[in-house]
Length: 350
Image (cartoon, rainbow, N blue to C red; front, side, top):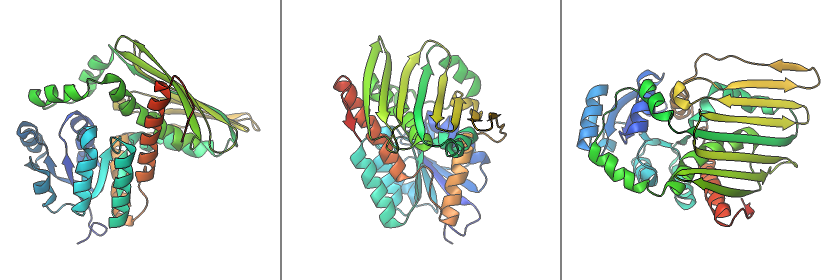
């Protein structure tokens, strides 16, 4: 039986850490059209306990899990392992949903996309914001406001408010202290880690809503352990300009959104802390009629919705959203932003 004819996509997950436990595994439990079959983590403590919690097989060796009858794999390991884990899954004939970023660098991301294409397999990037129904609505609404003049977006991660907020929203997590200590060493380069982690969200959403940029110019600010990147770029289509801010951290509440102004109107987007699982608030204003539309949404868990979209793409052969090219573009923009900031705001072509 092929993945396209199976009633439910049989799913394995590699990487049983925080993002898997708070996002992907709960989504797999309730998503329509998928069946979680196995999990894998190099930590026996994590693999055993998470597998027990979800009533599935647990593995510490990825090749062993890939030998199980699976259709697809979620890669939720640390960023530096995305390329190797996704490559192993693709070469084993599995479709892959890989957490953002697609890979640690543009070369790896490009190779992953080429491999998936050559094998005829689906490769989707876990930029789940595209599956926020508010963002989906905004994507369509932008097409109604004509040529874009001005786009501004911001993504500000809260500092002191984040731990208690997550403690309220997150389920009890299985933690391996040795793994946590080990991974902390890879996050010690805070500047690089923060830009890669948060920048891909900003840049993917920017491309999804406003299109590609021709270039960008970025300046970085650091105060203690807090970083902010402020940038601008020329939209690839037309004469519009986009500005963006990525701040980690801000000593206030979470703040994220878009203001998009076109020749015919305005689209405003205000997004929430992702784990609220609340659709972004959107307003569409059309100047000709002086009417403002403010849609309301129900089903709004972007992690569940992205997994259901992944399963549909596998079953019906449709394109993944976002796909490998989108994942590559986001990584390239992160690299360009880092280069521009290093050069004190020099314009870097994309």
